[in-house]
Length: 388
Image (cartoon, rainbow, N blue to C red; front, side, top):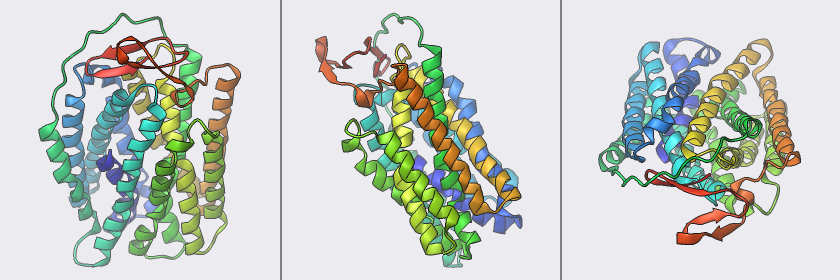
């Protein structure tokens, strides 16, 4: 997940560098994050099959795909190479996005997912700094910094081990379609807001008058804010209304990014937005995983599908809006997305469906397995212990 966080954040910085290399405006490269999203969409339906025998195939295959995609993006001299690299990043990222929630499903899914995504956010801080710093030397293209993820990914692919399959209990009914749809929609909205900033933060700083190298370095403030938010988040889950507070902080940061004309103030706005949006994805994903009678592998597939949908739609929508109005005004698109997310969670609360793992009470069941009070059954899948 740390490697995935690094390459995802690098996509935003690569847009600026590739626009110089290909001689086109950055807005015309909105398809780059979309290729990552299409890779997610292509892999999402394969989740139950990919995870059927445990996490090994997803870990090894995802590692090799991301390593290859990062290499193609690092050396891309024509758009076709960048497209292929983005697709491979999406396919490998989907494998990681599938296996991570499936391995962490359970009573404390929201807390555990927040910690794992904190590792991804900490690593993502390095991406713009490494790319911008390398590019600023003028010796080599900054995109070569993508190659930093290749050795650890190859190590992971080589050392992933199979797990012994465990018997599957009979499935109990079907999940409520309305609750699953609302929680899926909440994940889409959370990822949409995050990627509007992840992909276009550096471009916003360039539009404020900074050089691409300087903008890439200052652009680290958004992933740095996300790292801070996710490191601070676990103790707060279950104690405060984290989604509402996070949405309010994100909206405040977005307004600063829109209103400010000074690059230093914009950077502060990106930091604030990062702190706010950090907790939204793990909390909404944990809510999807906790949907009654939805098993963890199917929930993971739905989560990857939600991420792919958001990554394709949101940054492209912001880019299209930026062609009509100024780029900074285009960041206002994040405000209705946040409002819609809160509305979906409110509807869940009103209908009594918002009992996510972060709100459950941990108990012990026979055999020592953890459960959440009020949930229906803890089940074991092949290589996973999951909460249904």
